[in-house]
Every structure is written in structure tokens, then in C-alpha cells.
Length: 241
Image 1 (spheres, rainbow, N blue to C red):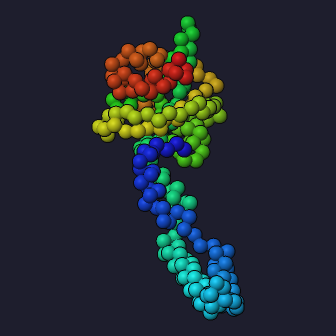
Image 2 (cartoon, rainbow, N blue to C red; image 1 turned 60 degrees about the vertical axis):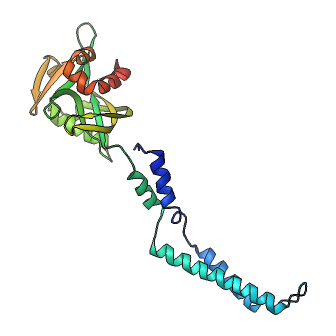
Image 3 (tube, rainbow, N blue to C red; image 1 turned 90 degrees about the horizontal axis):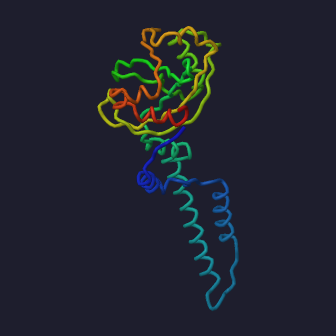
């Protein structure tokens, strides 16, 4: 999982949590404090440089008491405000500016002259032809992609093979939300054992979606696609162009 975090935001978080990070009283510290306190109470001190042993013992006893009080206070604070690496990780993840994790599914074939044609569909929300895309799952994402592609194209899952290629964080204007949003696009290549059923026509309907075969050049020349999705087309072109 990729995170997009402003350095200033991370520095501010660590500054706010600095008194809690690592504020953990261990059993070794408690034993050390008790041992020190017992040793100064039971020890005998000789006069040193004109300072009586009684005064020295009193000073060390006060230090031992102060040290023990500090341990008790730290122990109380640690139990009152527990903060561990899991909570710190959660706070860091909450700084993430990535608003959408999407998996781009790339399926292509070649025409009679060897030109690559890519499968896109007509997305009603965006009013635009887009590459197949699905929300990235935190676990077993590739298995989920196989299920979704199988359902959308009505092809047996055993004939579909998925390969992760790369990922990229992109900021782009979201037509559906009418604002700039940050996307983490994971790029996958899908290979289908027998494409003949869906590759014979330039467009077809499956599972309530209208699919098209288009070259990257055709997408870039389409004003609507270029306006709404050119950054993704360029991303795909870098890998498959």
C-alpha cells in the first residue's frame, strides 16, 4: 500500500505525539528503581570531604524516592494514555492524501496489421469511455479482479489470467465529484485464453455495459476522453504503447 503524506503534516503529528512515543515503563525499569531505593536505605555511608554519612544517605534516599515517584508517574501515564506502534501507524495512515485506490485492467488484442486495440467501456457517471477499472481490495485483489472481469465479460474465470504491472499516484479532476482527487492507480494486464467471442466486433454489450475496442491513438484524439482521462492514457501508453 502506498501513502501520500505531506512532510509538514508528518512532522506536526510526531511533534504532537512526542511525549507518548516510546513512553513505556518496562519491568526492568521498575526493578531498577526498587533496587536503587532499597540499596540506599540499607547502605551505610562514611564521611566524605567533611560531609557526614548521614547527610549523604539522606541525599541519596531523596534521589531514590524521586526516581521511584517518577517511575510510578510514568507508569500511570502509560496506562492512562496507552500509545503503541499500531496507534502511531494508524495516525500516519490517517494523514494519507490518497482518496481512491483503483485497479486499472488492461485487455488488448491486435488487428490485422498488428495494431494494439484496447478494451474500454462507456462509463455513465463520467460520460466517457474508460479502461476497465475496479476499486482495489486490501486483500486478494487479483482474485477479486478475476471475479469482476469474469462477471462483466461473461467469460469463465478459468480462461482469465491476471498480471500486476506497476502503480502510480495521480492527481486528476474527478467528473463525478467535481473536484481534484488523488488516485493510486494499480495497473494490471488481463489475458484471456480465447478472445474471439468479444474481439470480432468493434463494440458489444455485456452485463449491461457497452464495450469498445480502441487504439491509444483513437482515445487521445477523442476530445472527451482526452479531456477527462488523458493522464491515464499516457500512463498506459508508457507501458503498453
